[in-house]
Length: 396
Length: 205
Image (tube, rainbow over the protein chains, first blue to last red):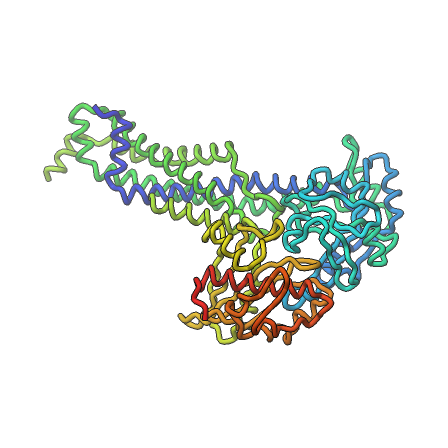
């Protein structure tokens, strides 16, 4: 004799098109829900990772630098504001500071990049402190600079790929026509480092005639130090701007939180649409089997048996839809990632959609739970069918 | 349902290969296509690779026809190639296809515009870092390639930079940058061979 589960399973195949469409609606809702839940988790992770990979928690720049950064992007190195190099010692002496690393970014206009030229940027870093602070960087080929003022470059993975460079190859800095030898190629990091060309800071200062000048100072704070207190002290330094990466993170997360409310509302609507779909499908199926259920009951089926049968059908439908949706979210995670990236004004590097057991579990449970909730009413209607009335309606 | 899942899997496989390695795309396809083919009304973009096409056998054939080995970590079987098929209404006006080439100081991106028979009707170096960049990107240098095809480049000896026939008439505008000139010539020959492999399938004019 066939079990209730078996009967429920078989019933789903009686109207294949309707079952398939409901399944797809459930799957799409589950996909949206899983992707959005994964985004909530993934965005924070990616941002944390980006900030951790910077190697320092506070960045010091010359006042007005954020605006100058735009100038750098648009016009090259002209018009940049600089910090004095003696700022390194001033900051390093603070008790909260573990280490500081000076940086000097210079950009040049390359007229032979594209139809109307383009900008190439070089980041001068201190060979003594930068590799230590950026301990996560690994080399695919070669290593760091051999001397503090060497005419050498270390290239990020993508920069090297674009320029087709290997260790031992040369680079030519446009405008100043200086040759640089490539001594290291980094492994892919998934951060902005992938597109960066690093040079020793002294070399950048000499090549661009910016001796004693910096565009930024990365500060690594001691483990137990009070970052807020340090930032307060740094604000008192003349003509500097303090960029706290924890503040940056919190500001970005606040902005994203607003977007998150909107996306979660969309997810909720998607789940509600699926819920209505389930109610409609199961209710239709109950009405179509009105006489059949009457016969079942006249043959001895109890109201609870009929109730369970409909609930089982709903459970199977929602489980399959939820599982398919979860599979979609995994399969199309990369595409979802790209879509989110296009929509967001700022997106950290790395994967923005983090799908893990918790996200998958919550998605699956929400879909099954919501579906079962939607199936209760049709199940209740089915359980209340009176055999005599049902059989009579058939004879009519 | 089964068909839907298969279609989904195919889309995923295609997009995964698309993001696998750096290709050579036009910076601004709308503008560049209109500039090279002013009479065009649209274009279709296709992503191709030797790995997804003829595989190792095709790679060996391309290397053999080029007469020079693929070198370095960036010139390999995985490289995605972007093919722009240029349309005027339903008719195909021609193709634009670019390749990356290692130069003395950086990557060189060499694009060719070909007519439906594989004859060069446009030559464009999108990116080049070289002391002789201005000369090699000049219109007068580009004009020397117009009207040539793979048949003319077949005899070009890549390792030694020796040419015969119409290709021998191509003048290096910057003799001091001979390696970049030879890199450009290699890129043109490679580009034509790849186009023959991907599009023309040996139907040379």
